[in-house]
Length: 114
Image 1 (cartoon, one colour):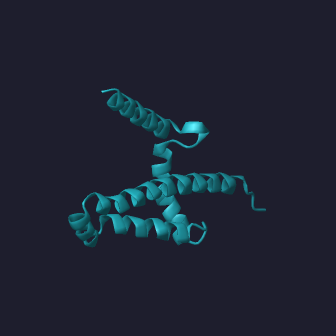
Image 2 (tube, rainbow, N blue to C red):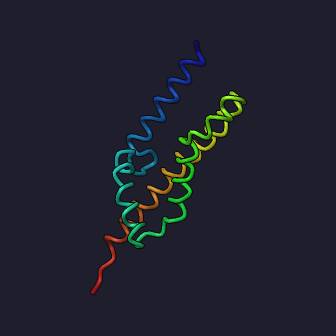
């Protein structure tokens, strides 16, 4: 029972930190809202996130791919472990890249063209 309460408290703290923007970083809603702008800026060549976005797209395709169901069917827990690692990496990559993009946007606002 104590482990369940600790786990619930940890998830609650994580959710609160993500939503409020822990350590002074952007909130989760700002990060999510930045994703379409980040994709557009990357596609237009203004932002240099092309390779990182390609890796995140490949990770997403890998996780949702129906071909990846075969290892899960035969390896059970071990088959799910690769998805868990990929999802953890993807979440961290999205958080890091959106923070980097939002900082880049702030820098662009400061640039004055004469």
